[in-house]
Length: 333
Ligand code: G3H
Ligand code: 13P
Ligand code: ZN
Image (cartoon, rainbow, N blue to C red; front, side, top):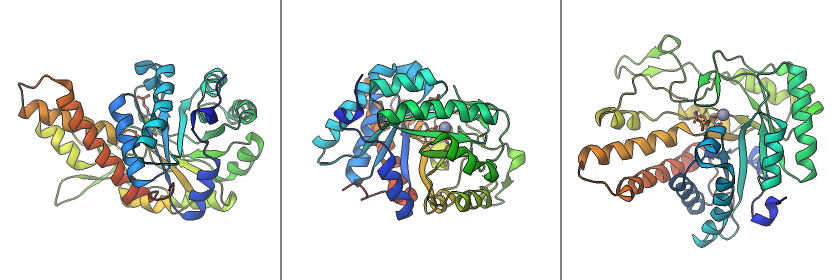
Protein backbone atom coordinates (compact mmCIF):
# COMPACT_ATOMS: atom_id res chain seq x y z
CA UNK A 1 0.00 0.00 0.00
CA UNK A 2 1.47 3.34 -1.09
CA UNK A 3 -0.19 6.59 -0.11
CA UNK A 4 -0.10 9.31 -2.77
CA UNK A 5 0.84 11.89 -0.15
CA UNK A 6 4.20 10.18 0.24
CA UNK A 7 4.76 10.65 -3.51
CA UNK A 8 4.18 14.42 -3.36
CA UNK A 9 0.84 14.16 -5.18
CA UNK A 10 -2.37 15.89 -4.10
CA UNK A 11 -6.06 14.96 -4.35
CA UNK A 12 -8.61 17.18 -6.09
CA UNK A 13 -10.63 18.43 -3.10
CA UNK A 14 -8.96 21.74 -2.39
CA UNK A 15 -8.09 22.56 -5.98
CA UNK A 16 -11.69 22.01 -7.12
CA UNK A 17 -13.10 24.16 -4.31
CA UNK A 18 -10.78 26.99 -5.34
CA UNK A 19 -11.51 26.55 -9.04
CA UNK A 20 -15.28 26.68 -8.55
CA UNK A 21 -14.97 29.82 -6.45
CA UNK A 22 -12.40 31.41 -8.74
CA UNK A 23 -14.27 30.74 -12.01
CA UNK A 24 -11.60 28.66 -13.74
CA UNK A 25 -11.09 24.96 -14.51
CA UNK A 26 -8.26 22.51 -13.86
CA UNK A 27 -6.80 20.80 -16.95
CA UNK A 28 -7.02 17.01 -16.97
CA UNK A 29 -4.61 15.75 -19.61
CA UNK A 30 -4.26 12.06 -20.50
CA UNK A 31 -0.76 10.64 -20.74
CA UNK A 32 0.56 7.45 -22.31
CA UNK A 33 4.25 8.09 -22.77
CA UNK A 34 7.23 10.11 -21.61
CA UNK A 35 7.00 12.88 -24.20
CA UNK A 36 3.39 13.64 -23.30
CA UNK A 37 4.20 13.66 -19.62
CA UNK A 38 7.21 15.94 -20.08
CA UNK A 39 5.14 18.36 -22.16
CA UNK A 40 2.33 18.43 -19.56
CA UNK A 41 4.71 19.04 -16.67
CA UNK A 42 6.73 21.67 -18.53
CA UNK A 43 3.52 23.54 -19.40
CA UNK A 44 2.11 23.29 -15.86
CA UNK A 45 5.43 24.31 -14.25
CA UNK A 46 5.89 27.26 -16.57
CA UNK A 47 2.35 28.54 -16.01
CA UNK A 48 2.15 27.46 -12.36
CA UNK A 49 -1.12 25.68 -13.07
CA UNK A 50 -2.51 22.82 -11.00
CA UNK A 51 -2.75 19.79 -13.26
CA UNK A 52 -4.43 16.39 -13.38
CA UNK A 53 -2.53 13.54 -15.03
CA UNK A 54 -5.05 11.01 -16.29
CA UNK A 55 -4.49 7.33 -16.94
CA UNK A 56 -7.08 5.62 -19.14
CA UNK A 57 -7.73 1.96 -19.80
CA UNK A 58 -6.02 2.39 -23.17
CA UNK A 59 -2.98 3.94 -21.49
CA UNK A 60 -2.79 1.09 -18.99
CA UNK A 61 -2.92 -1.46 -21.80
CA UNK A 62 -0.31 0.42 -23.81
CA UNK A 63 2.18 1.48 -21.15
CA UNK A 64 1.46 -0.53 -17.97
CA UNK A 65 -0.28 0.91 -14.90
CA UNK A 66 2.71 0.46 -12.57
CA UNK A 67 5.11 2.15 -14.95
CA UNK A 68 2.71 5.08 -15.41
CA UNK A 69 2.42 5.44 -11.64
CA UNK A 70 6.21 5.61 -11.28
CA UNK A 71 6.35 8.12 -14.13
CA UNK A 72 3.90 10.33 -12.23
CA UNK A 73 6.06 10.07 -9.13
CA UNK A 74 9.02 11.12 -11.26
CA UNK A 75 6.95 13.98 -12.64
CA UNK A 76 6.70 15.57 -9.19
CA UNK A 77 10.50 15.65 -8.89
CA UNK A 78 10.84 16.83 -12.49
CA UNK A 79 8.41 19.71 -11.79
CA UNK A 80 10.54 20.78 -8.82
CA UNK A 81 13.67 20.63 -10.95
CA UNK A 82 11.95 22.96 -13.39
CA UNK A 83 11.59 25.48 -10.57
CA UNK A 84 7.99 24.76 -9.52
CA UNK A 85 8.48 24.79 -5.78
CA UNK A 86 5.10 23.42 -4.71
CA UNK A 87 3.73 21.40 -7.60
CA UNK A 88 0.03 20.57 -7.43
CA UNK A 89 -0.18 17.36 -9.42
CA UNK A 90 -3.03 14.84 -9.24
CA UNK A 91 -2.66 11.28 -10.52
CA UNK A 92 -6.13 10.24 -11.64
CA UNK A 93 -7.68 7.04 -12.98
CA UNK A 94 -9.77 7.97 -16.02
CA UNK A 95 -12.96 5.94 -16.66
CA UNK A 96 -12.39 3.24 -14.05
CA UNK A 97 -14.99 0.56 -14.67
CA UNK A 98 -14.85 -1.65 -11.57
CA UNK A 99 -14.34 -1.50 -7.82
CA UNK A 100 -11.26 -3.74 -8.12
CA UNK A 101 -9.55 -1.42 -10.60
CA UNK A 102 -10.28 1.67 -8.51
CA UNK A 103 -8.99 -0.12 -5.40
CA UNK A 104 -5.79 -1.16 -7.15
CA UNK A 105 -5.14 2.45 -8.14
CA UNK A 106 -5.84 3.76 -4.62
CA UNK A 107 -3.50 1.09 -3.25
CA UNK A 108 -0.64 1.98 -5.59
CA UNK A 109 -0.65 5.74 -5.02
CA UNK A 110 -3.24 7.37 -7.28
CA UNK A 111 -4.69 10.46 -5.58
CA UNK A 112 -8.01 10.46 -7.44
CA UNK A 113 -10.12 7.87 -9.25
CA UNK A 114 -13.09 7.96 -11.56
CA UNK A 115 -15.68 5.24 -11.30
CA UNK A 116 -17.59 5.42 -14.56
CA UNK A 117 -20.73 3.39 -13.98
CA UNK A 118 -22.77 5.68 -16.21
CA UNK A 119 -23.74 2.86 -18.54
CA UNK A 120 -25.36 0.91 -15.67
CA UNK A 121 -28.94 1.42 -14.48
CA UNK A 122 -29.25 4.35 -12.05
CA UNK A 123 -29.42 2.32 -8.81
CA UNK A 124 -26.46 0.16 -9.85
CA UNK A 125 -24.45 3.27 -10.72
CA UNK A 126 -25.19 4.58 -7.20
CA UNK A 127 -24.28 1.30 -5.49
CA UNK A 128 -20.94 0.87 -7.30
CA UNK A 129 -19.99 4.52 -6.93
CA UNK A 130 -20.83 4.41 -3.21
CA UNK A 131 -18.63 1.34 -2.75
CA UNK A 132 -15.65 3.04 -4.43
CA UNK A 133 -16.20 6.24 -2.40
CA UNK A 134 -16.26 4.31 0.88
CA UNK A 135 -12.92 2.68 0.07
CA UNK A 136 -11.18 5.69 -1.48
CA UNK A 137 -12.15 8.10 1.27
CA UNK A 138 -10.43 5.93 3.87
CA UNK A 139 -7.19 7.04 2.21
CA UNK A 140 -8.33 10.59 1.38
CA UNK A 141 -8.45 9.76 -2.33
CA UNK A 142 -11.13 11.76 -4.16
CA UNK A 143 -13.73 10.15 -6.44
CA UNK A 144 -15.27 11.35 -9.69
CA UNK A 145 -18.54 9.75 -10.78
CA UNK A 146 -20.61 10.07 -13.95
CA UNK A 147 -24.28 10.55 -14.62
CA UNK A 148 -25.58 10.72 -18.19
CA UNK A 149 -23.97 9.21 -21.29
CA UNK A 150 -21.49 10.76 -23.71
CA UNK A 151 -21.54 9.63 -27.32
CA UNK A 152 -18.35 8.87 -29.20
CA UNK A 153 -16.00 6.05 -29.88
CA UNK A 154 -12.42 5.68 -28.78
CA UNK A 155 -10.26 2.67 -28.11
CA UNK A 156 -11.82 1.81 -24.80
CA UNK A 157 -14.63 4.29 -24.21
CA UNK A 158 -17.59 4.04 -26.47
CA UNK A 159 -21.31 4.67 -26.68
CA UNK A 160 -23.55 4.83 -29.70
CA UNK A 161 -25.79 7.58 -28.42
CA UNK A 162 -25.55 10.24 -25.77
CA UNK A 163 -28.18 11.30 -23.33
CA UNK A 164 -27.89 14.40 -21.25
CA UNK A 165 -27.60 14.23 -17.49
CA UNK A 166 -31.02 14.66 -15.90
CA UNK A 167 -30.82 17.59 -13.46
CA UNK A 168 -33.61 16.10 -11.35
CA UNK A 169 -31.31 13.17 -10.45
CA UNK A 170 -28.16 14.99 -9.36
CA UNK A 171 -29.01 15.82 -5.75
CA UNK A 172 -30.06 12.25 -4.99
CA UNK A 173 -26.99 10.87 -6.81
CA UNK A 174 -24.43 13.14 -5.15
CA UNK A 175 -25.96 12.70 -1.69
CA UNK A 176 -26.30 8.93 -1.81
CA UNK A 177 -22.90 8.25 -3.39
CA UNK A 178 -20.81 10.83 -1.52
CA UNK A 179 -18.78 11.42 -4.70
CA UNK A 180 -16.44 14.43 -4.78
CA UNK A 181 -17.16 15.53 -8.34
CA UNK A 182 -19.63 14.68 -11.06
CA UNK A 183 -19.01 14.22 -14.78
CA UNK A 184 -22.06 15.29 -16.74
CA UNK A 185 -23.28 14.95 -20.29
CA UNK A 186 -24.23 18.24 -22.00
CA UNK A 187 -23.21 17.51 -25.57
CA UNK A 188 -19.46 16.86 -25.43
CA UNK A 189 -18.15 13.51 -26.64
CA UNK A 190 -14.93 11.57 -26.91
CA UNK A 191 -12.54 11.52 -29.86
CA UNK A 192 -11.79 13.72 -32.88
CA UNK A 193 -15.15 13.13 -34.59
CA UNK A 194 -17.52 14.49 -31.99
CA UNK A 195 -20.40 15.17 -34.32
CA UNK A 196 -21.65 13.66 -37.53
CA UNK A 197 -21.78 16.14 -40.43
CA UNK A 198 -25.59 15.92 -40.37
CA UNK A 199 -25.61 17.22 -36.77
CA UNK A 200 -23.63 20.32 -37.81
CA UNK A 201 -24.03 23.28 -40.10
CA UNK A 202 -21.28 24.36 -42.51
CA UNK A 203 -19.50 27.71 -42.50
CA UNK A 204 -20.15 28.94 -46.06
CA UNK A 205 -16.78 30.76 -46.19
CA UNK A 206 -14.45 28.00 -44.99
CA UNK A 207 -16.58 24.94 -45.67
CA UNK A 208 -15.79 23.74 -42.15
CA UNK A 209 -18.34 22.04 -39.92
CA UNK A 210 -19.89 24.14 -37.15
CA UNK A 211 -21.00 21.89 -34.26
CA UNK A 212 -24.24 22.30 -32.30
CA UNK A 213 -23.76 24.30 -29.06
CA UNK A 214 -23.40 22.63 -25.68
CA UNK A 215 -26.53 22.40 -23.53
CA UNK A 216 -25.68 25.24 -21.14
CA UNK A 217 -29.29 25.19 -19.91
CA UNK A 218 -28.72 21.68 -18.52
CA UNK A 219 -25.44 22.78 -16.89
CA UNK A 220 -27.13 25.78 -15.26
CA UNK A 221 -29.98 23.65 -13.94
CA UNK A 222 -27.47 21.23 -12.42
CA UNK A 223 -25.59 24.13 -10.84
CA UNK A 224 -28.80 25.39 -9.28
CA UNK A 225 -29.52 21.97 -7.77
CA UNK A 226 -25.97 21.51 -6.44
CA UNK A 227 -24.54 24.97 -5.77
CA UNK A 228 -20.74 24.94 -5.69
CA UNK A 229 -20.48 21.21 -6.40
CA UNK A 230 -17.51 20.36 -8.71
CA UNK A 231 -18.66 19.45 -12.22
CA UNK A 232 -16.48 17.68 -14.81
CA UNK A 233 -16.58 17.78 -18.61
CA UNK A 234 -15.20 14.83 -20.54
CA UNK A 235 -14.72 14.84 -24.29
CA UNK A 236 -13.60 18.46 -24.36
CA UNK A 237 -11.01 18.53 -27.11
CA UNK A 238 -11.51 21.31 -29.63
CA UNK A 239 -9.89 19.50 -32.55
CA UNK A 240 -7.83 22.53 -33.68
CA UNK A 241 -8.28 22.87 -37.42
CA UNK A 242 -4.66 23.94 -37.90
CA UNK A 243 -3.54 20.50 -36.73
CA UNK A 244 -6.11 18.75 -38.88
CA UNK A 245 -4.84 20.77 -41.87
CA UNK A 246 -1.17 19.96 -41.17
CA UNK A 247 -2.02 16.27 -40.83
CA UNK A 248 -4.03 16.26 -44.06
CA UNK A 249 -1.36 18.27 -45.94
CA UNK A 250 1.31 15.77 -44.96
CA UNK A 251 -0.31 12.54 -46.01
CA UNK A 252 -2.95 12.12 -43.31
CA UNK A 253 -6.67 11.68 -43.78
CA UNK A 254 -8.94 13.23 -41.18
CA UNK A 255 -11.96 14.47 -43.09
CA UNK A 256 -14.54 16.44 -41.12
CA UNK A 257 -12.89 16.01 -37.72
CA UNK A 258 -14.68 18.39 -35.36
CA UNK A 259 -14.53 19.31 -31.66
CA UNK A 260 -15.95 21.65 -29.02
CA UNK A 261 -15.29 25.34 -29.77
CA UNK A 262 -12.90 26.85 -27.23
CA UNK A 263 -15.19 29.84 -26.47
CA UNK A 264 -17.74 27.38 -25.10
CA UNK A 265 -15.15 25.73 -22.87
CA UNK A 266 -14.02 29.15 -21.70
CA UNK A 267 -17.61 29.92 -20.75
CA UNK A 268 -18.00 26.55 -19.00
CA UNK A 269 -14.78 27.13 -17.01
CA UNK A 270 -16.34 30.19 -15.41
CA UNK A 271 -19.17 28.04 -13.99
CA UNK A 272 -19.06 25.08 -11.59
CA UNK A 273 -17.19 23.14 -14.27
CA UNK A 274 -13.82 22.75 -12.59
CA UNK A 275 -12.20 19.86 -14.51
CA UNK A 276 -11.95 19.70 -18.28
CA UNK A 277 -10.66 16.52 -19.96
CA UNK A 278 -8.45 16.85 -23.02
CA UNK A 279 -6.81 13.93 -24.78
CA UNK A 280 -7.55 13.99 -28.52
CA UNK A 281 -6.06 17.48 -29.05
CA UNK A 282 -2.73 16.26 -27.74
CA UNK A 283 -2.87 13.27 -30.11
CA UNK A 284 -3.50 15.67 -32.98
CA UNK A 285 -0.63 17.98 -31.97
CA UNK A 286 1.74 15.03 -31.75
CA UNK A 287 0.62 13.50 -35.05
CA UNK A 288 0.81 16.84 -36.90
CA UNK A 289 4.39 17.46 -35.75
CA UNK A 290 5.55 13.93 -36.55
CA UNK A 291 3.88 13.83 -39.98
CA UNK A 292 5.53 17.14 -40.86
CA UNK A 293 9.01 15.84 -40.03
CA UNK A 294 8.43 12.56 -41.87
CA UNK A 295 7.17 14.39 -44.95
CA UNK A 296 9.79 17.14 -45.03
CA UNK A 297 12.80 15.08 -43.92
CA UNK A 298 12.34 11.57 -45.31
CA UNK A 299 15.92 10.68 -44.37
CA UNK A 300 15.33 11.27 -40.65
CA UNK A 301 15.29 8.14 -38.53
CA UNK A 302 16.38 9.31 -35.07
CA UNK A 303 13.14 9.19 -33.01
CA UNK A 304 14.33 12.15 -30.94
CA UNK A 305 14.21 14.27 -34.09
CA UNK A 306 10.47 13.73 -34.48
CA UNK A 307 9.39 13.03 -30.91
CA UNK A 308 11.20 16.23 -29.82
CA UNK A 309 9.14 18.49 -32.13
CA UNK A 310 6.03 16.52 -31.14
CA UNK A 311 6.76 17.23 -27.48
CA UNK A 312 7.28 20.94 -28.19
CA UNK A 313 3.99 21.11 -30.08
CA UNK A 314 2.11 19.40 -27.24
CA UNK A 315 3.65 21.78 -24.71
CA UNK A 316 2.45 24.73 -26.81
CA UNK A 317 -1.03 23.21 -26.92
CA UNK A 318 -1.16 22.56 -23.15
CA UNK A 319 0.01 26.10 -22.37
CA UNK A 320 -2.62 27.53 -24.69
CA UNK A 321 -5.35 25.50 -22.99
CA UNK A 322 -4.19 26.52 -19.52
CA UNK A 323 -3.81 30.23 -20.26
CA UNK A 324 -6.42 30.97 -22.92
CA UNK A 325 -9.17 28.43 -22.33
CA UNK A 326 -9.26 27.18 -18.72
CA UNK A 327 -7.70 30.14 -16.92
CA UNK A 328 -5.79 27.99 -14.43
CA UNK A 329 -2.42 29.72 -14.85
CA UNK A 330 -0.93 31.14 -11.69
CA UNK A 331 -3.30 29.15 -9.45
CA UNK A 332 -0.57 26.90 -8.03
CA UNK A 333 2.20 29.38 -7.22
O1 G3H B 1 -11.81 8.97 -22.35
C1 G3H B 1 -11.10 8.57 -23.24
C2 G3H B 1 -9.68 8.95 -23.30
O2 G3H B 1 -9.43 9.83 -24.36
C3 G3H B 1 -8.79 7.76 -23.32
O3 G3H B 1 -8.87 7.00 -24.44
O4 G3H B 1 -8.66 4.60 -23.72
O5 G3H B 1 -8.00 5.37 -26.03
O6 G3H B 1 -6.63 5.98 -24.04
P1 G3H B 1 -8.00 5.64 -24.56
P1 13P C 1 -11.31 14.11 -25.81
O1 13P C 1 -11.38 12.90 -26.66
O2 13P C 1 -12.28 15.16 -26.26
O3 13P C 1 -9.93 14.66 -25.72
O4 13P C 1 -11.78 13.71 -24.32
C1 13P C 1 -10.89 13.09 -23.43
C2 13P C 1 -11.56 12.55 -22.21
O5 13P C 1 -12.69 12.83 -21.90
C3 13P C 1 -10.79 11.65 -21.36
O6 13P C 1 -11.54 11.11 -20.32
ZN1 ZN D 1 -13.58 10.76 -20.82
